[in-house]
Image 1 (cartoon, rainbow, N blue to C red):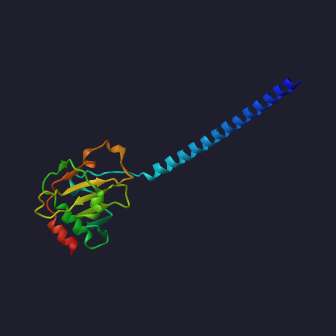
Image 2 (image 1 turned 90 degrees about the vertical axis):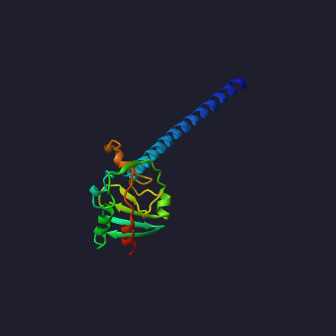
Image 3 (image 1 turned 180 degrees about the vertical axis):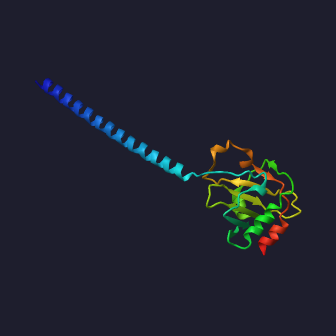
Length: 189
């Protein structure tokens, strides 16, 4: 009789353990589904925070769209010119005259941390449209080892628009703009 009682007790314990593990698997499955849902929401939110910007053909700066604002960076300090600023059109005109020849593609790595802190740069910003910002290096003459370049800047959380089929003129830096002496003088006054 003790053996039968012991056998029934073991079966009941195994049954209880089996039910308990089924419940844990069910809870894990529910937790897994909740985690997957949270991951999908995070990925969706991340995708929404990644803006797809349209680049412009920077191989001819005379054909760029008029920006909504201009930003002049000088050794880390920033001056913003809105379109209603009297200097706005003159800055664009002086910058456009720097293209005296056809621009060439440059094999160039641009460290935007350096751009933010060292040297002179002009940025065309498009706040009312879906265009990428355009950065111009402003080096005076003689520019020597410094190349006056122009490039679309998509930012660290931005990607070029896929519809552009990776048009080189919208991804690469272009260079050999004329020195920026007159433009720099105008910006600093």
